[in-house]
Image (cartoon, rainbow, N blue to C red; front, side):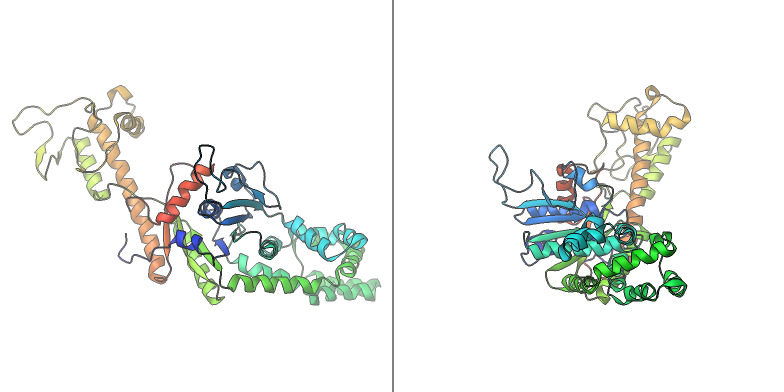
Length: 459
């Protein structure tokens, strides 16, 4: 670990706390928010909580990992998590896990259907202006994520809601967009657009053009009298609903600030992602929102970190050049001669899989088949065949791979330490990288175990 070791994020304590009702996983795109949210949901359910995971990830990886054919706007029970136990009689936790994927247009439709009746609701749903707004207006996805969170919390069917925030270009969009869309729908701006409909004629169209300059995206595709009519119909139908949007946005915002909500900022150990995480931590503090800690995903570790990259590279070069190498307990000798003057042994590694020259006393070594495969990849550029690989070449290849791993580890630790020097009070859970992608419940459980451990193996 680095010199400034941050406090460890106690993930299990957070999940077990009955007062924790909402966990929001936030961060920039591509850092593992969806996987983190799903793994937290599985672990919490198997520790006895009744959990629903709300994801806004369009890649639909969550459904695949949870073994559900498809997710939609309705929470669905995940089989094999929590419950009464398995077929072999193992005792279950009593918890449950449900999962859903936000359908922002359907959520918007549900709001209309809940506040309008019959023909009025149908007129709104079929209005072109409304369809453009609900399908693609900037900030709609983030606003509807907050709407759905408010709906789930109001139902009180779950004692823990885990939110996977939208994959926005900037993590800060999650906090900003609901206010932006709420301001748009609070009635004032809509009344500006309504004014030309009341004036009518060319004067009205001229006035509308001023309002049009303030609108972007899909709204600009609607032109002239058609737009004027659509706006008039839309506003007339929804006139009594606009204030409700702002009220609900404000209520959900207060819910995010309340005790019982915990934000987890998720990042990868890369400069850009950690920089974005630092911005988000500062913004959460400014908004007085409760931060639980930082989850640092895909962190590399090594069980042989006592062998530095420099020593590994030097040893590999000595092997390749037939130079002097470490023998045992710091002794040195020239390649090709033993202490008794007899030739050094050559040929394949011993049958137990240990390379003939162990530079890393006390550290694990690869088995022969794996080592040969790695070495073959290392020397393929030289035109050699697998049959020509020697034990020394296998060992040198492994040493170089180890040096590369240690350089990656050092870079990741420097990146983490820059964050902790700025925010030493933020608890951190470092999640060790898995060898492959997470695609099932077993993988999510493995991520959950690494989250709970908080420190990569060998780090």
